[in-house]
Structure formats: C-alpha cells, structure tokens
Length: 241
Image (cartoon, rainbow, N blue to C red; front, side, top):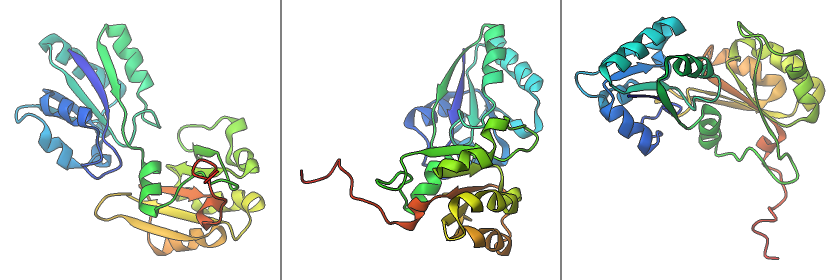
C-alpha cells in the first residue's frame, strides 16, 4: 500500500504525467483538491473507488482515510492541483504518514505558473532582462516571513509569479510601482488551460483596473516583469558562434 501525491496540473486534464494518470487509474482510494482539480481526471478512477474532496477535510480527516486504506492494503491517489510542491501543504501529510509507517511517493505536475507562461506564449527568463523567477504570495491566513515581503523581493526586479493573491491586486501594484515603474508589463491569467480561461495583459499601473473590469476574484496568477515587454538579447546558447 502506498500514498501517491500526484500533481494534476493546472486544469487541462491532458496536462498530467503518464505516471500520475496510471496511478489514478488503479487507485482504490482518492483524495482530491476540490474545485482546483478538473473532475474529468476523477473519471479515470476505478468505478468502485472511494473518493473524498479535501476542501472539506482537515489533516486529521485525511489521516483517518490513510489509516483505512492501509488496513485494506489499498493505494491512495492524493491529487493536488498544479505541482504539489508549491503551496500544496503536503509536508504535514508526509510527516503524518511517516509516523504511521505508510509509504508514499510524490509525482510532480505542471504548475499553474508554467501553464500561465505557456498560454501567454512567454519565456519567463530572457537574456539581458532577467534570469530569476520569484514564486511568492501575499500574506493571508498563512503569514509571510518579514524578509520575504513583496517589497523586499521586488528590489531586484525579477520575474514575479504571485500566487493566491488576486484579491490583493491593488496592494500589490502599490508595492511594486516604486521598483518596476508604472509602464512595466503585467499579466493576470485566470484558470490557465481551463475552458473558461481569461488573460489580462497591460501595464502595471493599469492591471488592477483591468482585473476588476473582468471580475476576476480568485483562481488567478499574477505575473510581473520586463520580460513581458518582449525586448531582449539573443541567447548565447543558439549563437552562430
């Protein structure tokens, strides 16, 4: 028996690894990340599989399911959105499994920041512009260490991929303007790769207004950086020299 933490990808059910899908197809137990996981993936489970929505569960609730599956000697597909290593809260689950002596494995997935770059048709690192990507979020229920506040991270003007913070878009703009300037390109991608995907691209000073106009209030990634301006040097990698 084993628990598999599976990255389901950003939304498109085809953006999952072959290994992840094969495990889902044979797992008798499944705990999935609510509305963040495309329900099409759940159709790949065995017809008699026991299925649980983690958005309605505490860690303790999940541990009960893991124990039950262990007693039945049946695998568990623990399906997370995107890649489970980013804001997936899997470390506490793995610690609980260690204490129970239950084996587990992590199957990586396509993160929403990678999917957002794909639908934007945008490379996030460009020669002469930036070679650094910062994945972060604004403070909410989960506090942010002081040295990781957005105002600190922004000083080097890297490519910023801001998760779980669309409701704080105005605060984000205010924080970033002194570092990136009002004309810096910014993008918001709502539900990247889903059928109802939305993309907003404009300059930093206007992004909050455009997001409000599109009524985007959740499930969106914010990307800020000069690489969105498309001006860059050719790569050394593919130089004729």
